[in-house]
Image 1: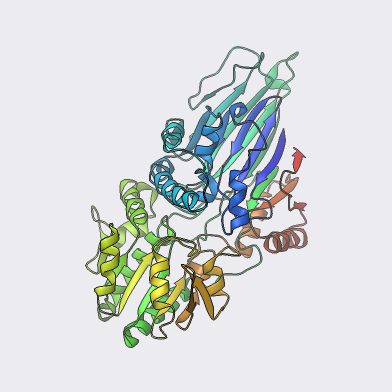
Image 2: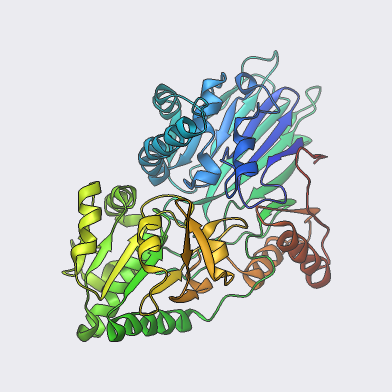
Length: 486
């Protein structure tokens, strides 16, 4: 078995990993590179492999940096099978058209064609199968080549097999439907009784590990029998605030803008962060009625994604559902107002302050949040709170790092408002949580190698050093296109 890193190497974005065995080719994730122009230009380069030769794709979750190039993969010849956890398919169906509209606009401005066509979205969606956590998929590789197939049932074949791969999704606790993907592969000597000479290995791709406990999701799952792990490192060199502290900081910022009659801007990703912040405000307003102010979710995509959360209540944690009561919507309270049209977004300006605006994009590198930031960043009565990861080069990162002036729509904008970053709202595990997960994955003591990905170089290397120092395990920070034998 070979593993090649075609994305996510020394980079938070662009997750794309290729497993190969004697012609069988499996991808884990196929995400967009994001954050700055050079990174985004990588999306237009040809894949380092032939998409038509890929047999299967397994998706860890529906964030764009993990799914964004799937329509391009289809456009360039992929016709295999895509497996995801059930809610992920619904989220992808809403995310792709929104992604395409933004890409089409950017491509027009930059005088080139979009990354893919709208019909490629429909094509790739037709290849997706959504399954529950822990429903095992068995991939059989028989001889001659060309008879590879997948089964989610207990189907067995009477023909001798050289390779059998079992795949299973575990809950990663990151966003709705997010998964750790486990591949267990077993090799057989066809000249003997296969079951008498089986030798197996397991590799776990964490995708993005959640910052459990979450407000909405069950805690991430742990494993104890890894031979290899491919683990994220977005916060590989950081420690989040205490979970209780995040609610206090957030409440104090809300009180600040109410007292000063200002505006609270929250750049937020359409999936999970927006829903968590809505729920946090619902709880806050329930506990302290005097804090109630208008809350605008100024993101048509986030509003569509919230619908998916209501479709899959069994994927939410018990405590979240019990807060409201049976049969009620945890994302619905009197102060909440959704905007869908451009006109409705503009009318937010007519609502007197104080008010709260949640809008995309989460890193302020596009979307409606830019219009609100241009209007209110220079207002010292107002505030901006970052509740998700801000990749290097993004506008959000510049504001969070303390720049006194930024450029929005080619105009200089002074930053005079209160700026807060609340890392504990992040959907990513911090360094102690990542080390805990790796340590538990090695409980059987057979962990051969830890591949550290999906983090900036300094973050990935910091986690690698911590793994070596604290867990005495071999840790590798792979380079783009680097291949390893497993």
